[in-house]
Structures are given as C-alpha cells and as structure tokens.
Amino acid sequence: METILEAIKVVFVESANGPKGAGEAFKKLESRLPSLKGRKFYGTLHYPNGSYRACLALEAEDDPDLLGLETWITPGGKYAREKIENWSEHLGEIPQVFSALSQTYQGRVDPDRPRIEFYKSQKELLLLLPIQ
Image 1 (spheres, rainbow, N blue to C red):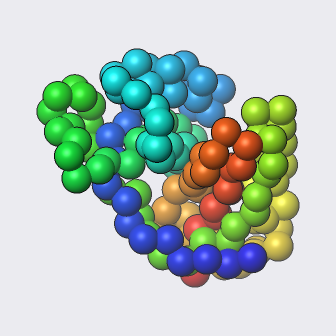
Image 2 (spheres, rainbow, N blue to C red):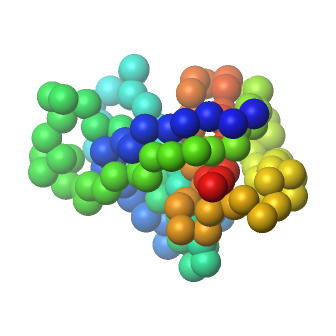
Image 3 (cartoon, rainbow, N blue to C red):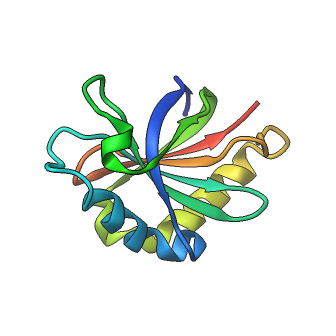
C-alpha cells in the first residue's frame, strides 16, 4: 500500500550502533519526557551510512531546548507502507519487511530519504519505505 506522509518536526537521539542500538536510543529519548502518553514515536534509518535515529514528534507546547535534544524534520512525500501487528514480538522481522518492500518497489525507492518506523501504538507498527 502507498501513502503520503507529511513532514514531521521531531527531536531525536542518534544510535551509536545503527539499528542494533535502537532500544538504547529510545530509552534515552523517553527518559527526557515527563510522560509517554499520547506521544508519537518514530525510528528512522538513513542510507547509505546506516545511521538510526529514535524520534519524537514535537507538539505545539514542547520546548526542544528544555528537552536538551536536537531537532530535525522527517521528510514528507510518498511512501510504501506495511503494518506489523504486535511489533514488540516481531522486531527481528523489520529488516525482512523493508527488504520485501524494496523488492516490490524496485526502481522506485528514494535513496535520499530515510526508511521510517512509526510506532502507532503499543501493538501496531507502520514501516514506511520512501518511494518516488
């Protein structure tokens, strides 16, 4: 399935170990927040260097300076989308799902935008592959 994603202003923590350090990066990010309730979290994987960012969408009342984190804008545009239910039990499948999406959209993948994981809820994860 294809979808259009708007650009999203976020604060982020960059993983020191690429996707393997995602859990640690999210823990650092979450530790800066008084509450996680109602917040939108994203993971972004950047090619070709393989860097990974744990991201939090900023809300109007957020002050990024108080959080002490860098800001960035996730790029909007067209993305191929795949859903993973009960994602915490299927974290190891994320690379394979992105690989399958890349095969399906071969020749249309946009290498200049990151792959995005949108943690929609405690149960639902949307994987977004940038396409042209």
